[in-house]
Amino acid sequence: MEHTPPPFFKTGPSALTRLISFSLLSVVLLVSDAHYAYLETLRQVSNVLLSPLERLVHAPSVMWDAMSTWLTTVDSLRQSNAVLLQENRLSRAQNQKTMALELENRQLRSLLMLRQKVSQNLVTAEILYAMRDPFSRRVILDKGREQKMQAGAAVMDALGVVGQITRIYSDLSEVTLITDKGQLVPVLNARNGLRSIVAGTGVGNVLELQFVPLNADVQKGDALVTSGIDGIYPAGLPVAEVLAVLQNPAQLFMTVICRPLAGVDHYGQVYVVEPNPVPLPARPTEAKKPALSRAHNLPGKVR
Image (cartoon, rainbow, N blue to C red; front, side):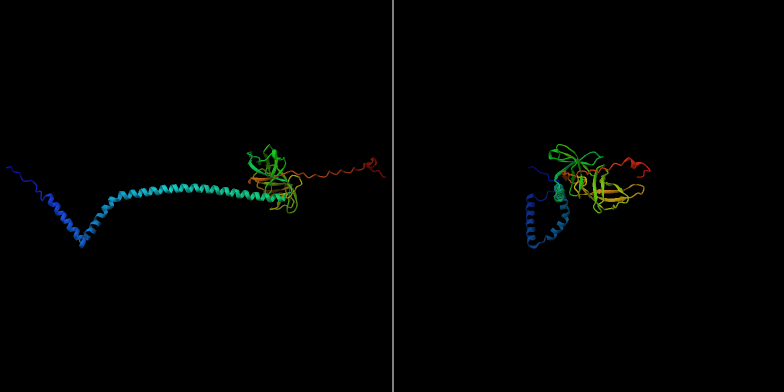
């Protein structure tokens, strides 16, 4: 007969016994809690004690969700911002184009009204670009010899005289502006009818009346219009406005500074006035004076 030594540690009840005991205890607790709610207080206490641990366990998941939401929001905002910027650029470009068209429309309407006031034939032209010479004030038109442009023809816009055609090409024309140095325009003071000549200075939009006597009636704000005596510019077209009148007794003539009324440095459409020279009457011949006899020239001769 074999003898088994006793175990070193006491093992307690068997596993089956423990399973049956704990199962019965679980059933009793479930029935008691369902009918009498004995474990509600214990449940609340355990929930309070385990809540920080639950939050700590769920913290990585919550942080990941927040980070994903933030990244998604930032990316969405960037895309929306890019779309809005593009739409803003397109709107601004469209707005500028609309403003340019409105300005051009107003200028064309003014040109149409001007056509009704001028009796001579007018040809519509467009300014392509300005000459690059910094010492001259000239622009290029889109019409030339093929469109029957003629050198010397006056160029004007809705506000007044712009300049004069000085050179003709096959399909282009060169216009010298009235602000160019040495360019002369016969003018008339609309207030008192005083005739004079306005000349370009070549410095910005500055004109000057030439050879105005010190006692001439010229005031600041006087409007100068074309006199028409040169046969090139139609009479009555606005040319300039007097800005300053400077008198120096040491000089023979006063200094009269003017500004051009026409858009010499802006606008794109102009009118070319076709030359229509008015036939002038023949110059009258002077009557011949009777020749005096030699006796009339002798001193002391008494008849």
